[in-house]
Length: 322
Image (cartoon, rainbow, N blue to C red; front, side):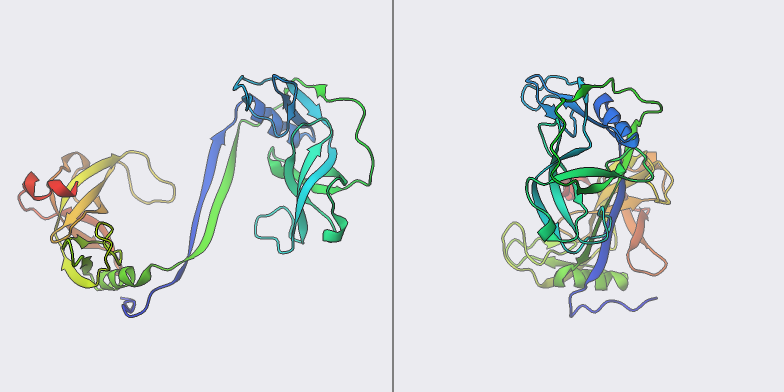
């Protein structure tokens, strides 16, 4: 078993929250993104005649449905900008660039994107820019690789032209990856909690005022507002207070559905924690079921809870912990 974390100093660890966000597209957004794939910029005309780029499905003023698509020029004017000296992972360019709002010729709103420029001295409000298209285009905003300076050329005299919004093999949905990298510091109270779990013990902290035992501990009582330092070992047995049956399998989670996720009030605790119930058919889980933890192989935390075989707890013993 790996060594337990020290309870005398707070833990710190890098943490990544990452998931793909999948969404379907309505007819306007579908036409806009498919158009980018075909090197065509589309906007939508509102009821008062303005042209919105990027287009939206409904008028932001009247809420009327919008379907009047128009083709916009690939050049425009910078309305405002900010220099980015240190690009982050996933940004449009890996060299310093400017974030710019560009009002494309014929549009009434500005589009946010990157401007490839040698330095901040080369960027100014009012400068003319043009789209640089990505070599490989898939129907996403990244089909615009960036903007590039376009001299001081004036915009076209003609206004935006009507467009049917019809393309071969239109884009119907997108997957946008979301990721957050940060350092998590659980604090002294939860560090002590994690250190105890590594020893297959569950420890909470008692409020000196209301005497409620918080598991996991928070370092302070949220009801009384006073610090909690009195450690109390609870469990290992507990009682299912409420539960739900999960029927949709989560991606990358090696648990077969259906399964049960429950609130479990460990003996001696003043509130319930979350845990998965196993070792019993999902349709036999019930409020009041007495359970005990089954630990992971490395002993770091309970993998799930299983029935103890004891009689169900009386409702009055856990009704305040629902």
